[in-house]
Image (cartoon, rainbow, N blue to C red):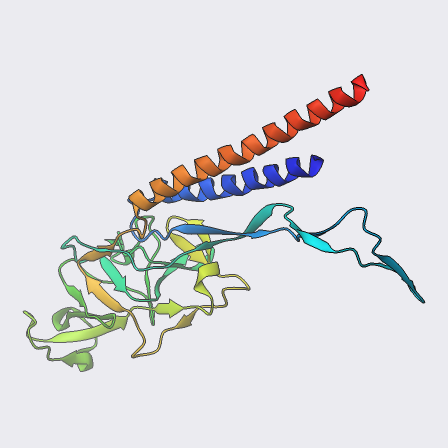
Length: 282
């Protein structure tokens, strides 16, 4: 009977983990590039139930064994298996700002921070005081050649992540190329966005400010090869991949499951109290 308390308590704890993840998703539904957290659970080892009173124990040279018929299995509770991030594609929102970039497909922008390189899907950037492309927190965005220095209304990013600038503003005249449909007569390739991927991206650690860091499970970042790179869309941002309606429905499910486990504990407590009172009377 005491086992029922632990089983109900483990169910309540599991639903608390799930509720925390849902609440965090709803709190970040308006954060650009946010990726929702998902919880998964597993059961504790189950116990085999054998029929009481059957003479199923037999002797053999190395000891005894229980051969009583098995009636079934008894669950012993549930525990959190993992809390991971879902990197499903979010919706595209047009901003018409040259500093806003969105990734359509798998991949991450690379950001230079005081703690080393970090990675993000939040493409809402700005022009820093020194002319570098930065996050809202002031961390430089990295290209394959280092931090990206641009001027307002003087750069364009194509779908492959290549950054083009007006050739009149570059110190490398040998980089000048013609570009069909461009209002500039001549353009120069400044750099290419450093877009990276990981072995197991779902286990990247959230650091805050829409940044992720690597660990032993996710593997180290590697630059995505040409042909496999996500499509870069300038003038757009990627919305969070959280559906508020689905999250609210799941929150209702969590509350009902939590209450059900709570009633299990209350019932077990009532049964134990009744049993003790009956024993005392006898």
